Image (cartoon, rainbow, N blue to C red; front, top):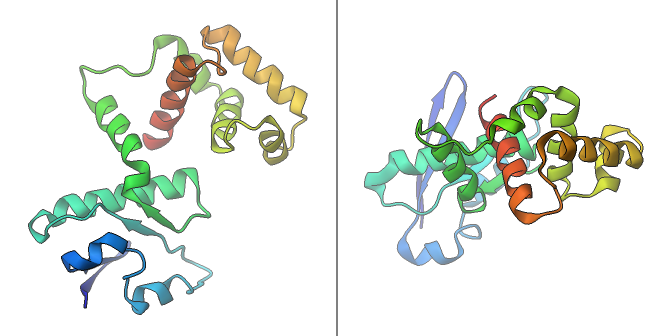
Length: 184
């Protein structure tokens, strides 16, 4: 049996669910029917997202809340259609976000600043990564010819010296996109 409570605020509600250790192994299937039924609610004025933190003891409720809240933020930014997101799936983004906020860490090379400030190139790169680097899907979503997407990606490569096809360079581009989106 699970214990839960709901905290309502002006900006929405936070539901907190405590689970017994034996329930932790398959945590999503043990969510009470009350919470599962909430996923069926459709209201014209609201979106409902579920951020699921890693399992924490009750004394670390603040950590669990931060993880769940970050999961929801990522869902809204990167994949608004996905209503249930696990912190485990976005923990890397949290580490990148935390590292970038440190004043001693600079994850984004200076040569990427121009690309991040160019709305057309940034949007192309963001949608390209959101679609698992598919030029076809990127062009469909942006209502742009695939050759135009290829041209923009080549332009990014020429301006930054970073090749989106090489793993190390792709990492810098991806981190730059994530960081900009999280800080908007």
